[in-house]
Length: 123
Length: 372
Image (cartoon, rainbow over all chains, first blue to last red):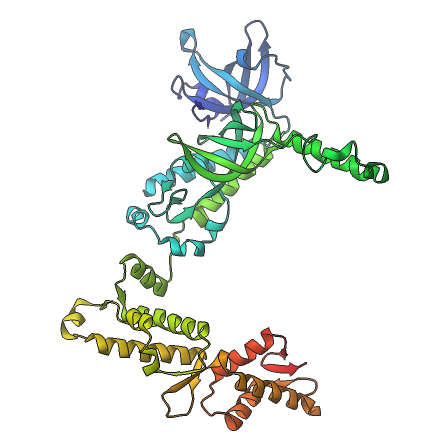
């Protein structure tokens, strides 16, 4: 079986700021604020350090799609660059996670990163 | 430090002493893909110093391939992706449990039971039918198939995780386990290390290891052949034991080797004497008389056994012992007085242990016994 690359947890602001290489698989989360059915695109947004970050997510692979506005979603897909250097995620998976404890997830991701960094540092 | 640790693979004889070995180890997929193969046995792997063969993972299904009897799921936990081979649940209509449902005359007698059984089957089916995007938990053995590592599941199911709570707690739990268990080295205690070393260096052992192994051999030999009494000279006529005692011995330090050239016959005699001392300390044997070179095998001695049982029985009849039972020191004194002063505490313990094991006596409290 040809397996895809692992979708590592990335924060929405890291993707929005263009810190992630094109083609990389990622999983991230944010609130769904708009859906363009014609373009098959949603926008996920999140607050971080008092600024708002947004990323476009292409939904062509996950149609038909029923958007719930204002609720958090988790997506897993590949980073693509649109014209004008705009970043978008080509979603393979897009799941509504209404009720998720976002701060706990952020904590767990940071803990996991810290653990791997420490372990690699030790070796 | 870490590298030298991982190079030194612990002998497979001792893997079972690592509690992780007998569990399905919860690991990040990335680490399963990077597990080191054991040099000693195929199908076994190492995470740092811990031997691992069975793992437990949770992640999102990102790929799926159906076969008639099983499905392949590509599972992504955010650190890596691995293929999991998952056997399908047998079709409920064909399975032996619910197969006869339609024709079974019992169905009319126990309608509720059959309804529940059907419901359980449905749940089972639901839990094992997964689509891309579902969260899955898989437990199974790590295998290598066409150069790719995969998990051959022994158990898998869909995880109902609408608010991601199960996965978040899984991540946090694993970090805790890695820090507190997996990354702590699995160490053998010093005396085991010496034995493990002996196992590795093929036949070359140190003298104390040889003696301990010889004592085991002698114990085995006398039990198998129902030997009741023996002397060291008797043992020296048993070829297999002598050969064993004659194995090449490694001296603990090279300096000693130079100063002490031990002749083989001396080594054999020395090994036998020390092994006998070990067996005496353990209570497996005792001297026939205080200065005698003949030894009695505790577990084969019917006389001692009967005498002990009689002593306990007799003593329990006395009213002052009727409630508490007979004390260990009293039994020992009686036996030493009436039977043989060479019977030691350890021997007595062995006899009482066997009697208790056969339900001839029972202990009422610490060090007190009653007879049936």
